[in-house]
Length: 231
Ligand SMILES: *Cc1c(COP(=O)(O)O)cnc(C)c1O
Image 1 (cartoon, rainbow, N blue to C red):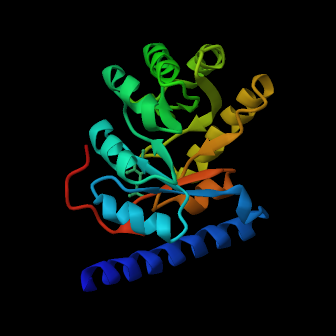
Image 2: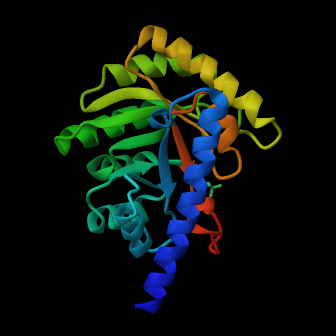
């Protein structure tokens, strides 16, 4: 009980801090706070933490591995589950059965597999196209976005919702996120409902909000440092 209450208090304090950072960044950018959704990334943390966050008012939770995600999504209902991070095609069917939003769609085979999974589960899954801003693995190249976008837009069970990126290590996040914003605007010219921009993590959410992010994906600043190595 005591542990539970300590953890709840810790998460509440972290959350207040992150919400204050988001509020300050919105103020600085002249944006309404309601334009930015906090997606708390619970990977490596127990389902009990996800439940505490939900009870503290977090509406959107994210994971980056199918098995862990599917277990937590079964246990923790009443939130929108997001899938972030690299997705293997053979896991797509499973992910489409519980995820409301998949942030990491970067190739045609994945679109097909997610569409099959969503259709079979009688669900609509929102899809973000992950963009590689430095040509590294994990993310489509900007030049490939229009074709991928049309594929998603025409796929049963999927809704093209926007774009996502991780700022490359070697690049100023402000520069990376403004490039992502330009790509989002170009996408919206063809697909007006693809309005989501998923950008910004614990270390760079301010720069992302300044560049128009609608969804920030925050792990460490809400939950603490992960002990387990990242996959
Ligand atoms: C883990 C992860 C995050 C959260 O990162 P933090 O630095 O812990 O906030 C965001 N996006 C993706 C894709 C992740 O895998």
